[in-house]
Length: 240
Length: 221
Image (cartoon, rainbow over all chains, first blue to last red):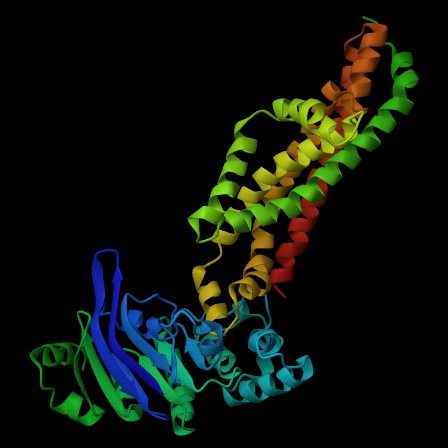
């Protein structure tokens, strides 16, 4: 589904990603963990070209997004993204937030898009908020709307960039619950997170990144219970 | 000191006609300035340096030279190439529009760039093109933020239209000067003209405050 080959990314002289390679199969849930500044957010943002990359290839659903001839907008319709700070559109209602892209990008009729949006709102448990504005929602609710908004494009992959990091602790659970359900439904997911419990429970594979490299990757149980590398051990001892 | 109300009464029809033209050219200047300003703002924000360049030059020239000089060059140099004899009202509208566009472009740019960049990222991540994201997500939010500085610019524009009197465009200030010249009086014509300008700008201030208030309550629905 996603294939990353020798990905390199620098900001000026600061090399953030140094030779990252990764294969993600359909329906797989890959969780990326690592200390702050390890490059994990940059990595996930490279997958839908929110960051321009400096070397290597990213192939999404058979299309090389690093190739100039690839229509990046088309690829992005297949790749949903959820941000740390939600980035809901504050001038639109919840329903409009969800239907905006399906109507203008997919060319859906308004009624059809709204019908689908309501199903998605139901799924994330926010049906009664359809006509509210984002400002009136709690952080957890906003993030659930953001997930519904991404799902409205019917993507083949979902990217989560620290979806619970900006939330009050008591709201983390509701967002993780939605993500869990999504994984159960067979969505291919790449999740950057600090939620080790989620990584262990939902992840098919956990990637530990540090200093621009993938240091270690394994099944959650193996990685958490028997880390092979010193840096992984050091990191896990601090967060677990 | 005697204050000759008869002069004011005598010239009132001309002052009112002049006021109409002042309002007309200002309105035309604002509308053309808004459209042109948006194009210039978007051009200046292009990621391509070579596309930015002409827009930068435009803004620097029109903000960096006096409007009076621009008006004289436009009226006596440029407009005569296209129409003869050149019409001072046309020249005034062109000058005001081009000048206002430079300021409005900077107002728009500041407004657009004040929108959190996560908004653009979210829109793009949903597959929108840059143009779609601008139109559907960024500009509607930016509009609210540019209302106060735009109101300011409209007031400046309205007052600067008085420079049209130098081109003999028959706007409000022109008739003020005409009355002053005919009667060799200072207070009566200029105070009257000043009061009319004040009524216009205060009305505009009130109008902009109203728009601003309505826009901000829109938010809280």
